[in-house]
Length: 227
Length: 227
Image 1 (cartoon, each protein chain N blue to C red):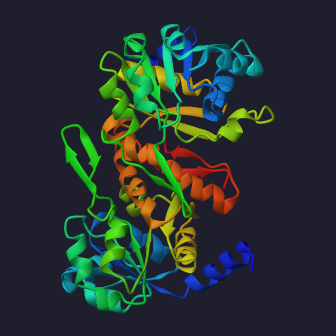
Image 2: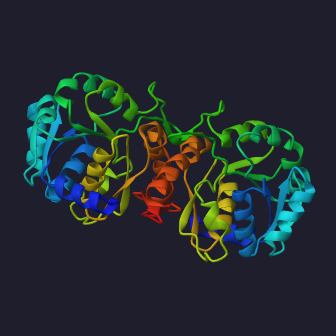
Image 3: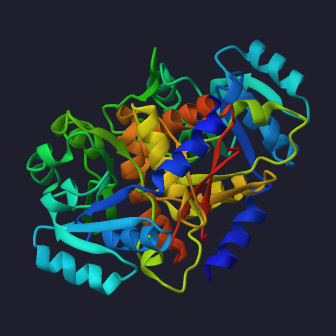
């Protein structure tokens, strides 16, 4: 099978899958849930409180459902992890059974903030994605969706999000499905960008994009050229 | 002065400056020297051996001169550090006097390689750029030019290099001059992307671009969108 065939196959396959968004009541999670639902994907957002998840889902509309994190994970095929870094490990450790066999997409950026702006935190495992992989040995862990502006994602007046999505992981079929998922959102392309051991720099590059946004009053994204 | 005025001023000012390239006989250094000379910049490439530097300069043409590293540093206004990571600290420590008062542009990517490809090394100081800043307290240290393909830079058939150059540093006038320098090369834009404490992820993102190049048979670069 050529690479193009396998991308087409992933594109067809992903359309029928249910996407869960853990931390789906936060800005990034809401924004992703909205864009994916708008693209035709079935979406369940998860939160510690089922009531808050259901309320957020009702606000988003487009068929998005809400559930507590465990039910969200259990009911989804692909689960995006969009929880705050503080709480990332604890949340995932508690969902190991529900996430077994699923494709997990970590999009968490471990950052610190002080008067000079944002800076990278260094997780003990190397990156948030590697922490997820360590805590979820029965899941197919990937990393993606790090560099998206929550403002643009949530703005219904924005029709296209002009950015590529770097997708990382060890499992080729899983990364291709996540690439296909990203590519469903108008303007986005999912691009394979390496193994999880190279996730830290992708996660922490958000600190640089925050500097760009501050200097240029922008909502910066990234395009990979010559691909 | 508005930000646009100050960018125009930097653009005018940089054209008259001499650019040195330490490690100018390597692929990245040669490529940068060639592109900057082609853009009208006076360029001196430096090497441990003056003879090798002169031979490489003659091959590049376009008025590029060659010298040993110390003479290259002493004779230049802006000095690009394009030496291998192995030797980076030693080379810079030996040039502290020659580099005093100069704008130093570190473009070194500390990477390791094994059977699975490239991965990020973590310098004790946090990044190559921070190591340069620690060793060169009398210089204005910036970081830039990390994500360029040496193949494209050196190929005379390539007229435009379709990529942005992330420029990092603490000194605003220095980063603006380096942005202006990058912007002289057709297709490139110099974009401010944060302080040196956020250089590590910019340097090590090259490991991801190597994965992109391998998967897509590309010479990948990066564009920052919405800027």
